Length: 247
Length: 243
Image (tube, rainbow over all chains, first blue to last red; front, top):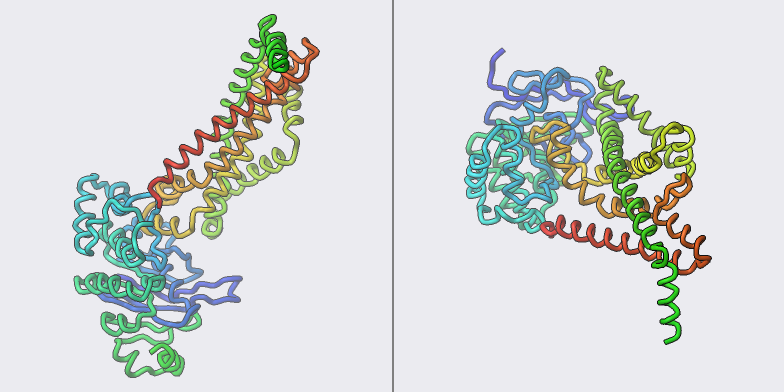
């Protein structure tokens, strides 16, 4: 079956303590090519677990995940190859503190994609230019602000030329005045047609940029739809009370 | 100035007469030889054990699902490492040295080699735990960042984790080697004339305890000071870029 669904998740389950805790309870979602999917929900609802399952940083208990029509939950699949196609951005940036920015950006492309140092550097500088941080190439992560670090983290993922970008609460650890600069980079990325899955508490971003919004609670997928459906016409009581609180 | 001239004549008698200082110098070289090679064995062994132990800790959950050959191999290696750590850290070094000398290598005549081996095996256990702690101290997010870029487990370890681990472990590793330098002073138990034994021999021959023993203690102190200085310098250089 050939379609434009870049990620298909079927009946995904993640249990802890033999099923006593259901972090993910039978989740099925699709991500189309070029689509921006935003996952919202209260803390502990399983949003991050779902996102981290997509590149198997969490190993699901049951269920199937297809990326590019390849079943990545199959133990025989080479997950490392697939992770190269899925860039990931973390809440706490996770830049490598012992390397300068340029090295942070080039280490993966040179070691994994077989790029020469010059090629990788050239591409990294081009991307740095686009996020306005080319002058910080020689700096170390500890010398940057949170917003700068997160933009670098996004560029680091982009240096691998991914087909999909996963964002795990990318602005939650930032000072409020730095949230905008990171969201701007993400918006630009979305505008260029990158497939993105974003876990966030930024409802404004979800409303403005998302093609599809997914609402989760207690490990279950409660509702999904366009931003308009979710924010203007919520169906379930749970989503209505959630939106009342956050907006 | 009486005490000074007394001291000088004592010094001449204890160290210079019959060229007794040569004993000290030879002993010092034996001590350095044992320490140096024991450190090398300790680091090699400690690295292997620490790799097995932390690979086990980090991967066992995901490997449990498959139960292939690698899973069982890792389990067996981990158990062996744990036994090694428990036995070595749970028994006195002198006893281990004597066991190596009288039982394991009863047929060997090369005492220094036996000592190198015994101290190396002993140090390896402590180095292993130091390195493992150093790996565990690198935040999990660094590991996840490496894996999410597409590095496999081994690549993530080599490119991302180990360079950061080295900085974490330097102070503790330096401490372990300071302990080791001084611990080799028990080599006299198996008839090796190391620095301590040399001092003790001079004490026996001159019937003077003060200068030989304080002299030896002073040399150990110097060795430790030099080592501490060098490691401190290395540490500062490694950290130079971080803040």
